Image (cartoon, helix red, strand yellow):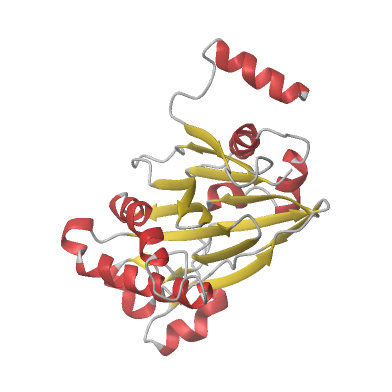
Length: 283
C-alpha cells in the first residue's frame, strides 16, 4: 500500500472524508484483477449537483459487462438522472448489441435522446453530456460520448484519449448549416447560440435544432499493456491534461482512492465545476 493510500484510509477513519461526495468501488467476477472505483464531488456553483455516474459489473446471459458512465447535466439534474437509469438498458436491449455493438450504441443514443425530448415537460429544458464505456467479457472496451466528458486509457504509462471533445468551434460549420451560430464573446468560451458550451448533448429541446446527439464511438482491445481507464466530467479535464491525470494515479492500486485523488487534485487546482471520476484498473 502506498503512502497516499495509507493517509486516505487514516483520514476516513477519523471522519475527514468529504461529506458532499459520493464514492464507491467494485470488481469483476470474471477476472479478480479488474476493479473499479468512483468519486463525485459537488462544485462551487450555486446549483444542485448535476453529475451522475454508473459503475458496475453486470451478468447478462453468459456474458459479463462492465458498465461505466459519467453524465454531466446542465440546467438539469433530471436529464442525467434519466440517462443513469435508462441508457445502458436501451443499449443492451438493442437486437444487434452482441454482433454490432457500435451500431447498437449509436441507435440507442438516438432513441434515448428522442425519449428525453418527448418527456421535456417532466424532465425540464436542460440537457446532459455523456461518456459511456462498456467492457465486454473483460476483453473488449467500447467507448461512446456526446459532449466534453472524457474517457482516457493508459497503456504502458502512456495516456490515450478514447472520446472526442465536442466543442462548438470545431463543429461550427455543422451548427451554422442547421441555422445556428457559435458565439465568441470576450472572456467567455464559445457557445452554441450564445448559450451552450458543447456542440453535442442529450436533451436541450430549445437548442436541439442546432445540436447533435450523435456519439463518437471507439473500440479498444484490452491487452497485457492496459493499466487503467479514467472516465471524468470536464470539471477534471479543464485543469488537468490526460497524461497528468494518468501519471498522478499510476502507482495508486486502489481504484476508488485513485478516483478520489483525481477529484481532490482538480479541486486543489481551483476547478469550480462538479467533478465526477471513475477509474477502472486492469492489474
